Length: 375
Image 1 (cartoon, rainbow, N blue to C red):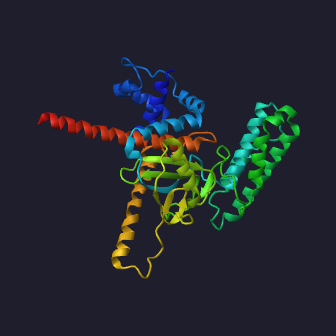
Image 2: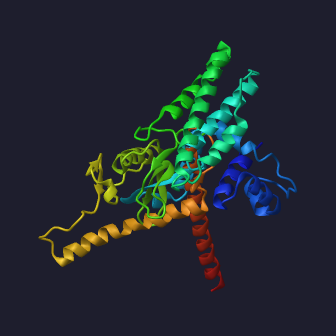
Image 3: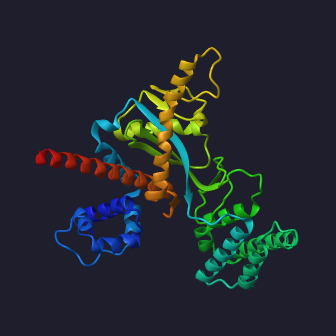
């Protein structure tokens, strides 16, 4: 497939908030999309299967997606280079179910059965129907009349999962055992993790998922990856965006974001404005980190207090940017698969934001030209 078709499709997906299959359906009906992707005449059929987007993303990898993001920033020219920038963190949730011990144990049972079937290994018992009923028994555990039964069912599921796992390790041949060694190590970690452990596993197919509490009233915990973001202060161009493993403190994300900004667009801002979560660092290299104090100084006059508040009022402009990325550019949930999927997803979301903003700027400039011609 032509590189312009694949890159153009990736951009259109983010600009118009479309999935792989829905893009193919929209592309067939839209001549502007086809022209953007390099077609010479109108096509009545999408040139490739939508699953090719998965292979293309894997082929170019994180570095290739980062180049696309960098070019989308450099489109703005001098507007992307500002003395003052804004920064904040958010959580990009992964497309996973709410994690419980019972669900994870059931997943391990299903995985063990699938491995045994693939390797043609005979099992004493598969526990397919039994495990389904046990999962149902774990529901509504907080009810006083169901608590005892639910706890017992949860323990039984973990016992069955451990039993099947040990049976596979005994019966599989040596070459097959080496092939599934990393998977078995992950399953053992899930079965033996405790409530108070650190670096727990919350998803079998996305083990990099972390549990992050951001203090939201409507959502106490979010299961995904912490995302750091830097935007310009005036027109809110995203100049750096990065996904982090685990749950690092907000102040620890700033330096890595500034390094990415320096590497991609050779920009070194003089001042970075952060909220109170960024307390702990006053300066990183040549960039001063500004965070609001919890309370004004006693010696400050009313005018000085007002000036300080005004300096940090602009920082709130980054919040709607994050909301738009989640709602309109597919950063709300990460549907991509793989260890580098969170970073690829946020790069593509930021690219969509930049291209949509550039489209608006071009539209306004064209309107001005037409108005001048009329006069």
